[in-house]
Amino acid sequence: MKQLIAVDWGTSSLRAALLDGQGRVLAEHSSARGILTVAPGEFAPVLVAACADLARPAGHFYLLSGMVGSRQGWKEAPYCPCPAGFAAISARLAWVEAGAQLGRCAIVPGLSHEHLGVPDVMRGEETQVLGALDLLGLDEGLFVLPGTHSKWVRVRAGRIEGFSTFMTGEFYALLRKHSILARTMPAEDGALDEQAFKQGVARAWQAGSLLHSAFSARTLSLFERLPAAALPSYLSGLVIGEELRSQQLDAAQGPVVVIGAPELTRRYEFALRDFGLTVRCVGAEATWRGLWAIAQTLES
Image (cartoon, rainbow, N blue to C red; front, side):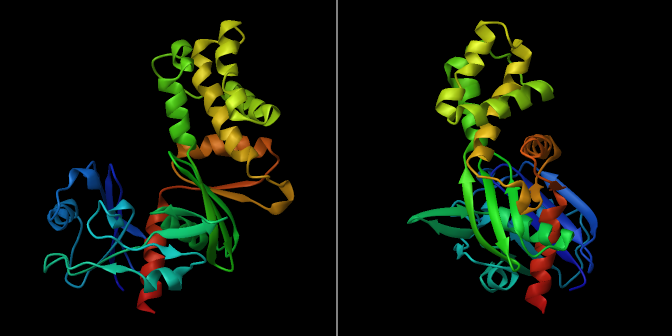
């Protein structure tokens, strides 16, 4: 496969990249054309327009990941059960009839995992984890993907064995905007206050329950022990600290790989280091590398 069009298509955005045979990015495009803005039957034209500025010689292969494979997307790509690695995921690609303008086009399936009889799912994060494995030369480890719904992923022998979802970002937004805590918060989050953030992480560990520790964001303000500008950082530390506390982390387990945008990975890196863990960070390049690696597995 000489070149690949890799596409990360979520609910609110579309990113595409032209990759060469070694997985290097030759050109990129991004837009706000997430799947929720696309009418049924319009996915192919939207993708063609998004890739208009990318070189598209005949024989290109389009490989898509993210919510584009959900029931609200272009075509539902059924979840692949864990454990799953490159081979299992490649075997379950959902092929799309995209017309002559696109040629070969497939969607990466999400993953499902059962824990104590309750299912958990992901779409897009599996591609990032596979990309991080390839970039870092790993075949096992613990990976965390921060976000609205953070994912903690366990990998062994090159396969994703299982994962857990934490609604950390969503809980932050609810507490920040729609609880009594909002009355003492500034209108905007502002820059991260590292000291207040770390104080929140420590408090989460001490309190042992977010239902209890969350109220401290109000009382510290009432007693003027934290300025209003520091409260969003403190609250962020509380919810992220609660997420980490539930992991029963052990400094002897080896590095934790954090995958995501720098604004979020930086916070997790601070918190994890305070727990005594070694951290490795990978950015948006994990998606491109994951799609490229899946395509290479398919070709081979």
